[in-house]
Image 1 (cartoon, rainbow, N blue to C red):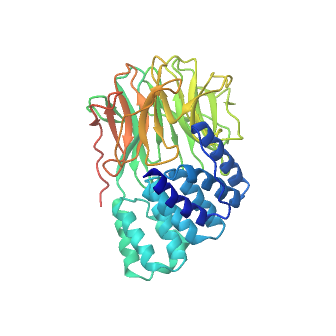
Image 2 (image 1 turned 60 degrees about the horizontal axis):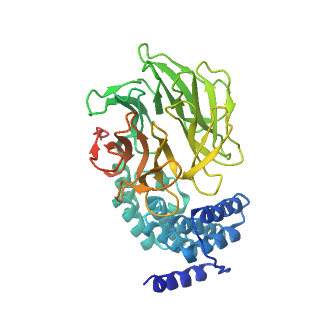
Image 3 (image 1 turned 120 degrees about the vertical axis):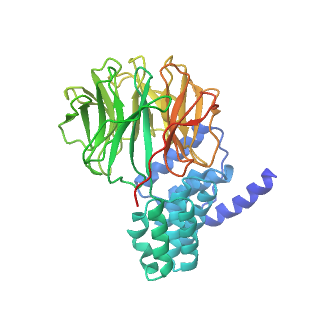
Length: 434
């Protein structure tokens, strides 16, 4: 069965590529090395090389949705719209960022004048809960469809898919509350606020007020302050707000770019965060709570993101794409001793430092939550559904993991045991008034 299906896919892959190179991929390190080469070729706009590497991966692993996606991007830039459409269709069929791939297929069909195919995929996209109307209304490839009555109906359907949602959860240091953001599912959200809720789902409290797009929060160890990212896309800064007075101040006065995902050190003196400027890689920075001592901890030569201070305070765990796929790394608070742990995204280290909860978006399928030993051994998948599950965070007592999931078609917060049992929905976000 495997040899037969592989042969069919091999024929398709070779038909899409002028290269047809084949080699055996032994493990994730081997696979990561190829993706790293593909990303390097992408940076240099060497699209034939990107296509060649993607095909190399697909001959051995035809379910590698990420490779199909990379092949689609390469084919699109090589002006092979038909080949790109096939590749994105395969990625969507493997549920690899399915909505994004369906949008790409619809766009390519419209670009080629295939109106019926374009509308078929746009309708499928709308039925799948796609909630980014401007990605349709603001895309020039769909301009040829605008005179058709079906176009207005699709855009209206997508606008109705936009919901309020809860996302980006983090525990208070005492483990009694969970802090999160709530805003529109449309990106960028027009407005969002920071909330906190008890771990049993009671006492939901709004923490920020007024206009703004407040997101990605964390709470100080004493529970008296919060730090969050706020501002327009391209101009997001970190703010520290006192929860009694609700007075907020800018943390970093220098103009260094978009500032995201802050994490407070356990001793309350420093904050680590992610920063990026348009067209540049994401970097991890650290700064003192008073705004002094700003320092970059990771290299600008590759993407590093989602830093979280460990409970011991002796290390920072973060994700980085330096090896070609997202992996979990640790480093000292001064940026030294950066050490690879395992292939993982949005990692969270348990209090005792022995286990990592993470999201898997490595090569195929939709994102799921896993738990493994901190040395990368014995990974166990603890969620299993067609929804996107993201950003797990260990409770301080290690008895629960909070995460965000789209299983209700928009993000809500859920709790579960570390073995994946006892899943319960924590938030029930009010819908946007129509």
